Structures are given as structure tokens and as C-alpha cells.
Image (cartoon, rainbow, N blue to C red):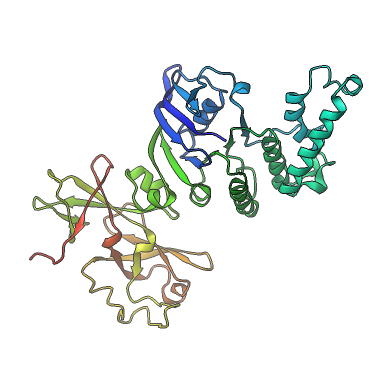
Length: 405
């Protein structure tokens, strides 16, 4: 396997920039995911790595060797496409065999009838068969080798496409939104299969998706792309808990983060919706302009609580003392929507001063405790608050030990 280095890649189509000064180092054996909204340049970057798209400037290195001007066949990279790209008239066996025959057979040996009469063809075919059988067994395709792609489910076809890539023994695997054509249940199943395959092969995977769930659950590291640039690179935990840009914070996380307008006083105190909070910033010039609060950092005060050995009325007192917690911000709003997912509930609350409902993640018991159009009080945990300046860059804020008068 191999490391891949993307060195200051630019890609321009006429007057539009698809990639702008993109640099990224992918370690040997790493599962790196390129994630971002449609049109951000992630597929273009993947095709540039593969050699299918020439870069306008910059370079691509594999194991520190420049391949920026090399043909795709010379890079020894295997690509799995969104559409699977299987030959419909060939069996599963022959689909997987295609790259092996192209590599090990001469042009004459690839002819259906004449090829079998040429010296060495049968011996090579025997080795190819052994490799295909071994790969099919590892992917659970042994019983499907004689079927045509039209006789397979979407998940099975995806495994065939992966199998065809594996037998090539490439330096790295490039996967361009390979699960987007599958239904929700199959996507979850295939996420697990691809992740386990990566562990088994210990191979370098570069994976493109717009689905943040895929990025968060499968990757060693994530590169978040916006408008042709890589905004942030890090582990899933780093990207989620410490986004460096408000665009990253809003894109990663489901439901998405709540963004509240904020102001910074000359003394450095941060006010949210005109309420002074214990958040403090040392930045000058009233830099803090907004604060992000994840849905799990919001709590209904007085709502029914389960799973912790206590229950209370939706209109009763708060035994946990959340309302009195000096590190929380209390807001009042009206419940506009309840999303019940069984194990959890997303509560949408319209709060005066916010253009969008504030969303909190709660226990299913809240379905009994509150109802649509009911006025509720929320406690926002400021210990988990993320502060952003006027340019959307993340900035450090501290919680004051005591609230000044």
C-alpha cells in the first residue's frame, strides 16, 4: 500500500475554480474521507488523484514519487464508482477477472477462442481463478460468481465492484460515493462491510461522500471541503467537537448545531440573545458574533426524565438544578415540532430572536411530557458552547469562575 500527497492542487474549468490550492497528506493504510456538500470539489479531487482529471497546477505524489503527469494505468490505483461500472453481459466471475486478464494476458490471449490455444494462457487463467475464488470468499460472493449483474441486489453489485478493485492489488483504493444508490438499511450494512474490509486489508482508502454519517463512522480522518477548498482535517471527534469554521460546525452533526447570535462587550463578556453569560473572550474589537450549541447540550427544564432513576412533571421543579446552573443559559420558547426516532426525540423550539427553531436531543419520555404549541424553558450548557467571530472562524472562550455584578 502507499501514502498519497496532494500538493497545492488547483483545477480550473474555463472561468470557474473547482479546486483551489488543495493540499492533503494521506498516510499509508489510512481511511481518509473527503466530505462536503454537492459541488464542493471532492469528486474532482478524487478523479485528479486517479489521473482521470488533469490538474491545472500542483502535483500528486504516491509514496513521495510524483505521478501528476502519469496516466491512470501507471498510478496503480483502484477506483470504485458510484454507478458500480459493471459489464452487464459478463458474469460476476468475469467482471472480477477483467483487470487480471488485462494485466496478465497479451492482446491475443484475451481473444475468446484463439487465446486458449496460446502457450501460458491456461496456467495464467488457473492463477486468476485462484485469486478470484479467494476474493469472492472474503466478500461473500462465492455463490454468485455465475450470475450477471442484473440478477444481483445493489449491495451485491457493490461488493462485486469492490472485489474487482481488490484483485488488482492496488497501491490505494479510491471510492466515489459508492453507497449513494443503496437504500438506508443496505447503506448501514455496507458501511460496516467496507470498514471491516479496510481493517482486513490494512490498505489506503480515499473515500468521497456527502453523507456525514458515513464520514463519521468509517474514517480514521476526515477532510471537510467547501467551495473547492479543504476547510479542516482531523479525526471524526476533532471535527465534531472542535470545528475551526462555522461552516464545518453546521455541516457536521445531525441534527445540525444551533447557531445563536452573540455580542461581545468591551470587557470581553459574551451576551447571547441580549443575555449576559459567563462566557468570556480575550479577543479585542467585539470579535465574537455567534455561539454554537449542539442539540445534546440543550435540555428541557422540568421535562420528564427517564433512564436516571427519576421522573418528574413537565411543569414541576428541576431536581437536577439545571435552571440554577451558572454555566447554563435559560431560554423560553414554544414547541413547534417533535421528531420521534424511538430511542431519542428531537424537539424543535421556536425562540424569539432566532430565525430558525432551536433543536434539542432528548429522551423519548419527553413525548409524554410536552406537546406541540406548549411553552417550555430550555437550559443550554455553555460548557459545550462553540464561539465564532464575524468571519466564521472558531475562537476560544472561557467560563468565568463567578459572574461579575
